[in-house]
Structure formats: structure tokens, C-alpha cells
Length: 181
Image (cartoon, rainbow, N blue to C red; front, side):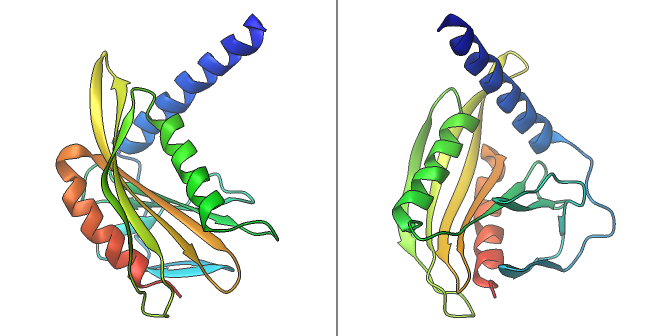
């Protein structure tokens, strides 16, 4: 039992370290694309955003976007399919992701609010603030989160930015989300 608990603690540390490296890394994808395309989702990206080309994607993680105009800002895009997938369990997956990414705690800044995209999708968007250790001090980040049903799958988008850039990320996040096709 103690070995299993030790593994979980090591895993959380590695996850937090990877998140910090991802957020504060200067390694952006070259030649910023104007669009993110996947078989389940297409997004138009504002100026300064690009698709991270070397991102590890899989069945659920389908994309990773980074901003050159908002230092340390990125967005992860997940897709979920299946007979028992619905808004509630996709949102719970998002909340579990935030809890894992922010081991020092998180709090909701804005409750879920329904918006409308250009294609007519109706995602629910909320805003979270989370805390983690970086360099021996506690750092605050903001994370907009959206859950949206498309014709082919459920989409979960989670953004990450330093607290000071949270309002800028929220604005860009909404632009990207509203462009969903």
C-alpha cells in the first residue's frame, strides 16, 4: 500500500513539474498556424497562437495550443466519445485534471455560462484559479475550461496562464472557442 501511495506522490510531482515547464517554456511551434484541424474539431486561432507540433496526443488529448502574445499561455484540447459520455462526466474529467494540475488547491472564479459558437454549438465555459509550487514558492494560474458537444464528440478545452495574464487568456480562449466548426 505504501509503495502505491509513493507512486502517486511521485506522479503528482512529475505532473506539476511538466505543467510548469509547459507553461513557462519558450519552445513554441515554428511558423504559427492560423487554424487547428482535427477530425472532430476545427478552430480558427487568433494572431499569436499556434499549434504545438511536438505535443504528445492520443485518443483523448487531440491538441495543444500555445500563445506567443500571452507569455506562458496554452490550451489543451481533449475529445471524448462513447455511449455513456455526457456533459457531467466530461466536466468531472476536466475538474479532475485541474485538481491534478493544481496540487495546492483551486477555486472557481466564474460559474459555468453557456455561450454560442459560429457553428451553433453551445459550450459551457467557466473560469478557475489554481495554485502550485514552482521554484519553492506557490504560484497562481488561471484556467478557463469549456465543455462542448459537437456532432462527432464531446470536447473539453482547458487553458493555462499566469494569474496576471488570466483576463487576456480568457478573452482569447472565448475567441478560439467561438470559432469551433
